[in-house]
Length: 64
Image 1 (cartoon, rainbow, N blue to C red):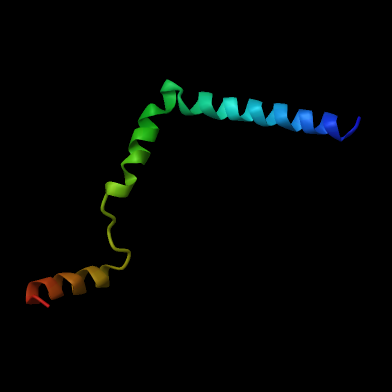
Image 2 (image 1 turned 45 degrees about the vertical axis):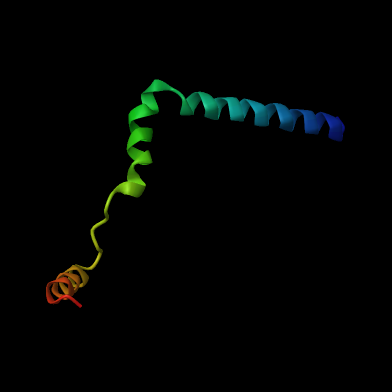
């Protein structure tokens, strides 16, 4: 076995992995999860620290 055989095997394994990822991505079972994930950038996150939220509300109330 020489380096050309190894290169060929790596190419075939990489292609099979690529085809597997494409099939997994476009399978109907994953559609709902992918649609939910696609909307994540548009959702508002709650601040981690409640004290920050209260201070932010106070600043908005004051108008600063």
